[in-house]
Image 1 (cartoon, rainbow, N blue to C red):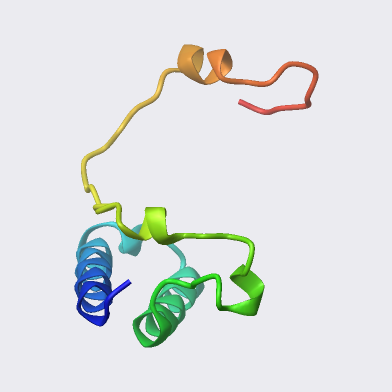
Image 2 (cartoon, helix red, strand yellow):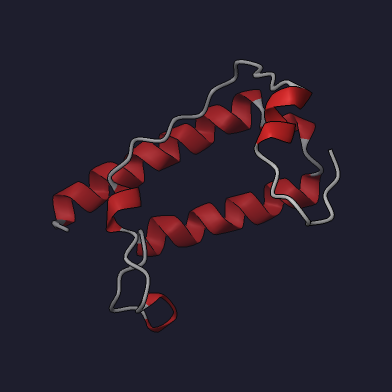
Length: 95
């Protein structure tokens, strides 16, 4: 992945995080926000992991890194029927 693309991707995720901080993060406990900020700092320094990173050598996240995930402040609802239709049988689950 080129240096320019990594910079664009980092900027994208930093901007999305800032939007989340303004709109959705206030609903979380402060310690969760601290963990998120710390993780973003690491991401801004390192970017997405590559297979050259020991902990990620068997996981190629390049396809994921190319997806433009976006923060959405819109409330989403999911019906209990949909959730139940996606459950795996014979496993203890709570809905």
